[in-house]
Every structure is written in C-alpha cells, then in structure tokens.
Length: 285
Image (cartoon, rainbow, N blue to C red; front, side):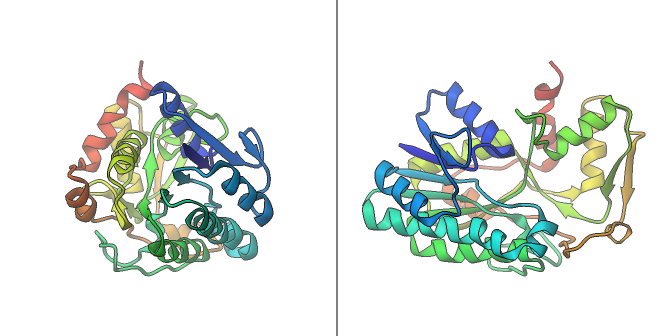
C-alpha cells in the first residue's frame, strides 16, 4: 500500500493521474479531497492514520514551498515541512518493519556555483532550512530524499508549473518576467515518476540529487521552451533577481550533479534541452 501526502499539490495531482493510468493502488492523506482527511499539523490525526493504514510506502509531497511565506510564517513552515514527515517516519518505524519513505526535497538547499553535489549544502532561507533538516532526520530511517525541481503539464488550473506559466503567457499574449541570473536543472514530471517507479523496486537510502545535465537560467529555459513549441517569445522578459522585491534570499545557482543517483539506480538523465523537448507533446496535441 502506498500513502501519498500533498496529493492536491502540483506534483501530487500529476502523480495521482500517473498512478491511476498504471493501475497502482494508493491512498491519500491531507486536509481535503483525500482518503484520510484531516489536518497534518495535528499529530494525533497523523499518528492514528499511520497506525491504522500501516503503508509499505510513504511518498511525501506535502510542503509549504512559498519561500517568502515560510520566511514570515516559520512555525507553520516547520510544522509542515519538517515535523510532519518526521512524525510519520517515527510512527512507521515503530509500527511496521517493512516500510519505505520517498521524500521530495528541494534544490534550494544549495547556493554558490553549481552543479552541486549532495554534501555541499548552503541553505540561505528558512524554507531550505526546513527541508535540509528533514533530509538529515530521514537518514535514520529506511528512506530517500530527492533534491529536485520539476516542470511539465499540470492537471490543475490553479497549480501551474513553470512551463505552464510560459505556455499560458504566450497564448494570452501577456508579459512573463523570468530571472536571467538564476540557474537550475529541473526534470520533467515523467522523469520523477520513472525514478519513483525504480526506487520502489530498489529502495535506495540516503540523500540524492535528481536533476538534468547542463542546466540553464530561467530565462534560457523559457526561451528554449518557446522555441521547441514554436511559440512567440516576445513576451518573455528577462530580469536580474535584484530587480524584484523579495522577502527571503534566493540561491542564484541550484544546478545539480546527479551522478550519485545515476550510478546507484543504474539510469541516465537527459540534458535540460532534451528534457524540455520530451514534454512537447503534453502541450501540443
């Protein structure tokens, strides 16, 4: 049995669709529209659900990812990003011998020049601190933390990926401001699902980067995405980060070195240009 948290978020809604298409049985936990509905900040609710269900696999997508919100609402951010998965892990370990935890972490734990290896962390905002702390806690459990960033076609009009926002801005002929000095190496939803499928079979433990080769700036991503889909990129406006008013600091280079995961899982990741090409059919049918 798979238990999925964060199932109503961007990645969660797409993962549920993937599970449904592949006849993979799962249950969901969260505040609403879940099999087990309740507040995951309520420790009694969380413990009771885990003890009742005793899932073999727990996939944690639940997180507050709004970096500025986390900076100004640290108690809530810690409760969701760190305390919740920690409690689930402790409860699973006490109640079940055969369990496995897949934690979706973040590339924001890195700063400085990339591509980064797993040990070179430097969190510069509270969001990344909460995610790094749970990464470390989970080293005591049968678990893997995947530090990643992702894109692709969303299944929710209210939760848009970076590629969705680019596509929509082109269709609606609206300006989209993107950073020209922030670098990353995201993967598509399909690549994350491929990795999860393989992890369920292999049960790797530890902290791993999950990113494409040869990352690029967010502006370069937007322009190349437009090129692949034959979209007019005239409304893509590149700006440096210091031109935007932000509460929390952001890392400028989050590019990932994913050789450790490639070697231990026996797979190869694409470069970012090829990964962008791979989602073309999701938008143009």
